[in-house]
Length: 327
Ligand code: TYM
Image 1 (cartoon, protein in one colour):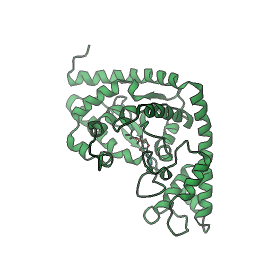
Image 2 (tube, helix red, strand yellow):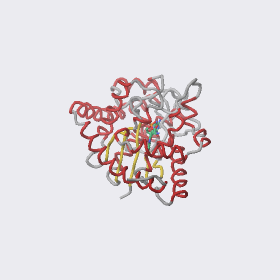
Image 3 (tube, protein in one colour):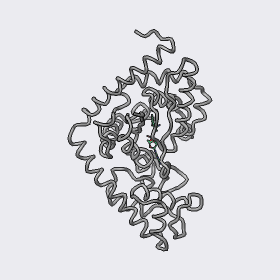
């Protein structure tokens, strides 16, 4: 069975972009693959986090994984910091990564732009991400489009290690959705929908109430035309909403276009909001049940145990190949 690994940062509420770009695929892949899904708290601290908020978000993201449909009996669900091998292999990979490679990363450029002081961890972030993936010899990594560059670097680092020290790591492939790989902001379709945006109207979180969702979608920016047509170049805002619609229904882009032909944006946006509400309401119900049940810590304990077993095996092999004294 092929192996899958992926993760999300507990650095804010998960958005519809996180769901469509990645989480939805986690849920599908668990039925056919050996899956590892983690909450990457060590990555979240590459930008300052309030301790109480980090703790709350870490619990919240874990609960959202389960609420979205990940079955902890099928997939291994764990917290990155609970499996110490991530930090250890992360360091080994930091020493294999070139400064020039890290300087080219667009996520680093975006997150450091205009800041006076930037933590060194933000710079070496991709080396830890490579370790996350290679530690389990993952074949597939479900992510949104914005993580493609990090995946490329992971593949380069795996190849570099294998060339230097002998065949050790599987070269992973990204698994990116055809529609919805990059969900854009509701207020500006040139920017990706992001949980760290300062304008709450620009994103929909998985925990937004039905009324908030309706309001945000009705206020979403659209062009001055009225044709519901998928054309990302000429109509980026409407195309973004169509991508969201397609992911919240069983309809294809062509079917959505046909459904709203000649009707204008009003009915389209109204129905889109109802589709999003229908998707998120049951998820939110399960989320509340999971948080109240107190089962999260048991899930995380079991997940960490299963993950650490795999991780330790592969870390030992890597260390031996590099020439460390392994007891
Ligand atoms: P993060 O926490 O920023 O995002 C989690 C996942 O959601 C996807 N995503 C989106 N997809 C479509 N449209 C959007 N607007 C959108 N916003 C976010 C991201 O592509 C991602 O798949 N570096 C990773 C976390 C990570 C990781 C890993 C991922 C750490 N180690 C190992 C895979 C494997 C990140 O920052 O994701």
